[in-house]
Length: 436
Image (cartoon, rainbow, N blue to C red):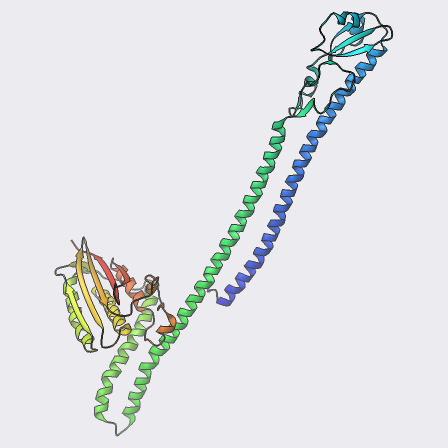
């Protein structure tokens, strides 16, 4: 699979930002359009309700006006004849004026008609307007008049009203659409921000990996050049016929050390690939961890003390675990190498401590070195990571030791962690399950 280069990643970010800008502009325009459309819809619905109200008022007033003028033209003295001539659901009754004088007209709603020969009163059906507008559930009739109606077009907006629920429903629908568009816009904006953040973090990670790889190349180059230069010097010395045999005796151990160092470096690089491809097979067996650690301590003690350092070991006895001792030995060697590499020559102090902790064996490597920066506890176990890049350029190493150590510890069912001591230096702790 082809990896994304930093330049390609930056171009991807630029394209993404450009597309995001266009999308945000499009989304903003869409939200604005929808909100304006919602406002226009509310205005249209409100206007439609008002038109329906005015239409109902107009139709009723026309009907009452037709009754009023028709009654005025009737030539009759009989109320019965008038009732027949003006048979209409809007009329509740008709009385001659003289008959009506004997009635209480206070709560009645009527027209006083001055006919051709006689005056008479037309009583109006108060429920008629509501029966006419009952088909429209958004309108309601409110009677605000009593007594004589002098204007046949007596209905106004005070009598035919729009129900509050209808206006409230329009308002609620508008708010619902507004919330919907706002939430959709916020959701898509959040997606864009998350995408931008993920690309930014990917670019940041690519930058860190690139720096670590450059440091790795620098370290590998440095590590390779030193033994190669030493070997070239040795070969050049051997070519000389008059070379000093004592000088050769001094150079041979150094050459062997450089070859060991070179071999270990190449082996580490190969180990990383094999671990990544899961090509290395582990062969755990029951081992006495206490005895194996005693042997290892005896082997490294002279090495540490030869540099002017101090070495102590406190190892609890008869602790058995299942593990591949060759892999654990690689872990321990790597930890000792790190302590020697980063410690102050002549004042290095290293302690190995093995104790029981419940059902686990707790193995600690403690030194008095410079310690680690806060926040690096987990990163130090990543491949090629060496902490502060600038300050580590002059210190030999490839940044693979702790990564390989972590993988070997995990392969043997253990855990490994690192922390700073309360004073100076740091402690690397390994935990393995004790064999029952």
